Image 1: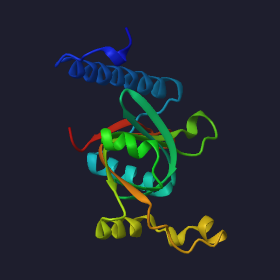
Image 2: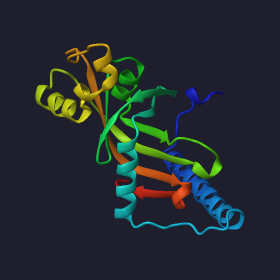
Image 3: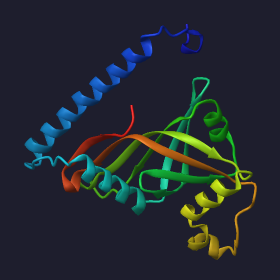
Image 4: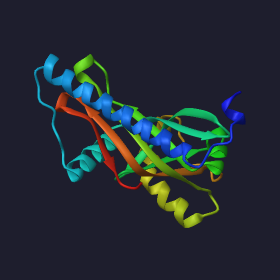
Length: 197
């Protein structure tokens, strides 16, 4: 029988969440032990405030992420260009499957990574959050989101002489609820920031 036909029991989702969290904790302990034993370095533990600042900085330094959505048990991961403001992520889009998925399920995940030049250069971020679709007819919210996106500053759009965004473009705003950050060069090993349960 496929997952598509299974009716979930009330506690089943909680059990899967607890199992996932337990797996993450075990993995984190292994990676920290390997970091200390193989690389002979101590892991760095940041305060929540320091971690939040590091995550915001990493988001600001990058522009491409993978946006994962899911509806009707069909996951979809889409590479997209984004801009951030603090821990909020903004994506402009013509629409498509990701918008349809978000309309059915606002819970999303985002992942991004830094430039890779070997094992010790690994930097990555996973975000779990809630997406909001800002349609063009919500003029004030749309205009505010466009300011964050800074489209007029994009060199790639200047090269093809795009002066303004089409008025039918949607904006996806993602509010971060949980984030896991890995920065091997700094010794930050999958440290988790929980903003909302």
